[in-house]
Length: 225
Ligand SMILES: [Ca+2]
Ligand SMILES: [Ca+2]
Image 1: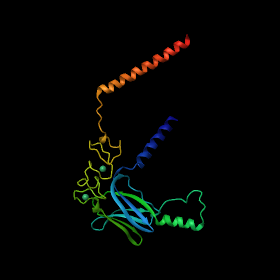
Image 2 (image 1 turned 90 degrees about the horizontal axis):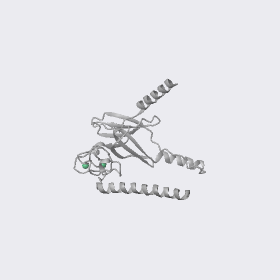
Image 3 (image 1 turned 180 degrees about the vertical axis):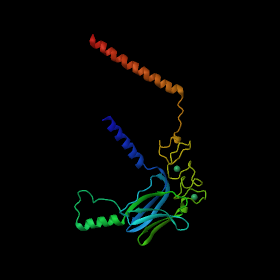
Image 4 (image 1 turned 90 degrees about the vertical axis):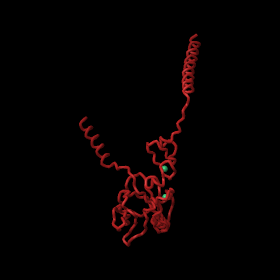
């Protein structure tokens, strides 16, 4: 029985190990479809997992180098995900309208490897290119931290200690001002509470406990009498 239990634990650890994907700097690509018109709405480098290919998809998103060579490609399913409102009585036409809207209006985010050699991203279907994004926008080295740039893709324009709309809570004694309270331990305002105050509070707490115990004993004694 114990042996079986050990084998099960070892198997579970192995499964976890095999399927655990590594967190790393990746290119986050936001795609938007508006009335059927597909555009790449936002691109930036973030720390996340790579997207898995979606076999049902008829679109491919590619990373290309300066010689138009494909460095990486991923199959994507360009379709919104949703269900008709629960309990709503919808006619056949209304349902058709609902599913058509899912097909033509949606937002989608995919994560691609951050390859320095890649200079642009294309989104393609069987007829050719649908949308394109120029990756030089991830850093233009002009001294200002702008749209699409952040510390991960452009440390020269976006130093970690200044705002770039992305929280990177590294333990490096630099506070990232984009992190909400408590996320970056380097941002903790070090409150130097004077020792005499803390010791006074401790003294008060002990005194209070003694008073409570004494009061309890006195009431017990009174009851016995
Ligand atoms: Ca810049
Ligand atoms: Ca930041």
